[in-house]
Length: 613
Image (tube, rainbow, N blue to C red):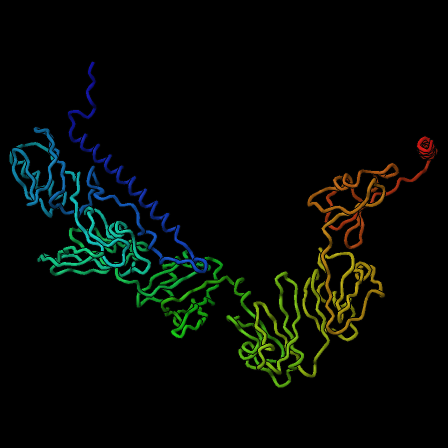
């Protein structure tokens, strides 16, 4: 039995299904194109490493994508409502009702189509809806009770010229549904020096002429007469979605890419770091908008603008972007860096004591001690120039005290080059005090002025005491080339007066961290010190020590903490670094214990006698 096709006999339904399929096809293509465009946006590079060429934002989106010649020339397409027909376009005309038929017609060079038994119709410059209305009226003169549907199923090819700073300037065969960006991609993308914001679209007026031009050594003929020139800014298309900045192409359009305008670089705590091209009237506020705005941790009151002057000198300007009335103008080649507050703290130095304006100051490139004193308003009359010092944090987080001679800063060796975090102290002449440096495992390491009669223990307590990771063993005191050792447990816990030394000016006191070990002593097979393992229990370290000895009291195990305190524990107790496990000895109380000891002794004697024989 023959089954009829479900759409047969219903031309309108069949045409509707074609429209639905066409719409779905185009939507899927659009989703894919949008995904690729967003991928390009996300893949925009940030600030490259030194020596790396960074293209201005947007160049990657136009860079040499594969655009097939004659794309969109075959197959159904969802036609824009304002698309105007021209010679070469292909139409599918479907008629149903009392007459059921369909035609595939191409617009002639004269702008006409020929419908059998109906005649010629002029359709050039008509939209699809206007064409459908014209065809319906004309067919209606010959047939009653009919419906007409017109689809654009093939696009005419057009010639477009892409010139200027593109990789492959030439003329290209494209379609009227292609945009300016498509033509630039077809030409291989922009040259690094090409503008993405001043692209010129030259479109001819009604009067037509021919001019000769030369591209890569060969002459080409470019149609011209009275060109309408429109400047196109693709940033406004990428960032704001303004379609009039990425127009559809027309036949014989000329796209010219001039040299780029000023370009600046922005990096740091910004959402879209990179290099951007600016227009003359644009400044820092416009750049921040293009770069997507700040990260939440960005510190807005200090934004760094680095600039190379005409004399090739590098300068730096700090700008408060919460008040862009001052310092918002940018220059070609500027580099803008957005820091977090924590990062800015690292780029500061401080000076305190006998200066006009003590406090923190921004650290400039190559900044010296004399620059900082000048920024602080100079020294006061009572400043002690020979007793000044610089406290510097080394790479290993230890602190170094550098003596300074402020009386001879004209000598380069005396004019210290400052590092981030440096602290300059200028004491007064009449109050020059003895100082000591505390470092290592104390709560507040640094330089401390000695109080009258103050000793080692008193200074450590004044720093807030030792940290939880401090050693229980010896601390070191460096004094005039010698190194003294003091047991920290005896000093801080036992408060032994013999360890509480008097301090001298310039002493350097170092409290080391506790060793990362656990010690097992007492009634175990092989006591000793073992590497610390986080979250391990007493049982684990007893195993490393070979287990209990025969006289071990397995029910009496203690741990001695780093501070000297003890606690009774079980085998499942977690051990901390630096602690000591002590296994107590089993006491001999009854005759059974004595008998056990006697048997073990006789056994040992018998073994020795056997070996001797």
